[in-house]
Amino acid sequence: MKVSCLQENLAKGLSIVGRAVATRSTLPVLGNILISTDASRLKLSATNLEVGINCWVGAKVDQEGAITVPARLLADFVNSLPPERIDLNLITRTQTLNVKCGRYEANIKGIDAQEFPLILIPEEDHRVRIDPGLLCEMIDQVAFAAATDESRPVLTGVLAEVNADGLTFAAADGYRLSLRSVELADPPEEPMSAIIPARALQELRRISGDEQEPVEMLIAPSRNQVFFHLQNVDLVSQLVEGQFPDLKHTIPTSYKTRVTLATPDSLQAVRMAFIFARDAANVIRMQVVPGGEGDVGRLIVTATSPEHGDNVSEMDVTVEGDPIEVAFNARYLIDALNVIGTAQVSMELRDPTSPGVLRPVGGGDFVHVFMPMYTAR
Image 1 (cartoon, rainbow, N blue to C red):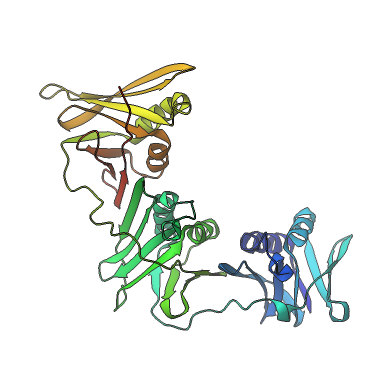
Image 2 (tube, rainbow, N blue to C red):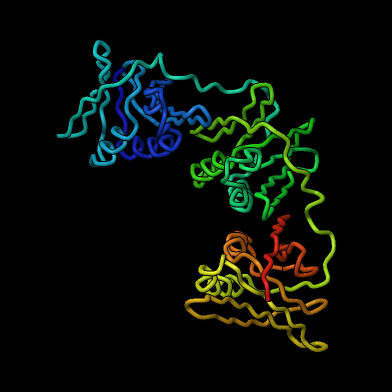
């Protein structure tokens, strides 16, 4: 293999596939990146057997070939090189990759490419095309609500449902639920459903930030995989097996109090309360005070630290319904308010023991449900 490419292109490609490299594995080859030629481009591949990423880099290919080399070693060396042309030359006899850039040169010992697991692309043709900006927004608004505790593996994933109405992502960890739906220009003929690992979607979000062309998503239940195709990147992930909870009965359908408030103001108030709430299980109290007829209502956010003191923030809001006081987890509210994406947000409340609901005002079809916290008075 003899290949030439630009340092900045190779460094970017290595950063894209690098997150799929296995950090702890009994198979040494999974700690490597597969470098191979593919027509007139250089192909980089990495996998931890749960997520696999292929990335293509523009290159001048003089001789075909393939080798796997230690991911971290190669990435650190390439990132340290000047922004010039890099020449890659495989010494087949010793399975060594010679890397040369200007006056810098290294010989990196690798493992035969035949030992690297194949990252196969599903052949089914039921592909869904999504605008990359919209896809990133959906991932931001949903993936954070997935569980990180592996005791219930099904909750570490994001439920993806595709039907004639569009695409829906949903995630829940037992304390909160995020759901986002979008319409598709070309919905599939048959509905599809799968649980995609939240970590895989977060990786997709990371690598698709600059994407211009629609992202193709293909769910292949027969292989228990989901496949995402970008302009120069493919991502394949194993699906999470199991039955996702029925979320339709989780979202409250009625409320007694509805508060409309400015998103930046509410986020600032909750963040300030969180400074004191950290010492008290993240508990903050929200008191809704309706105004008189035609008057502006008030939202009072408080937090108390037994050791350090307390905090009170007050803001003007629009209130429909009854006065109410309820306690919530500040961290969960901050996570949700960070991804609302609109200037105003509505909060629907029923009573101190029922879940609250956040919805963007004038935004997309996004719903966030969060459980209240019990506090003794």
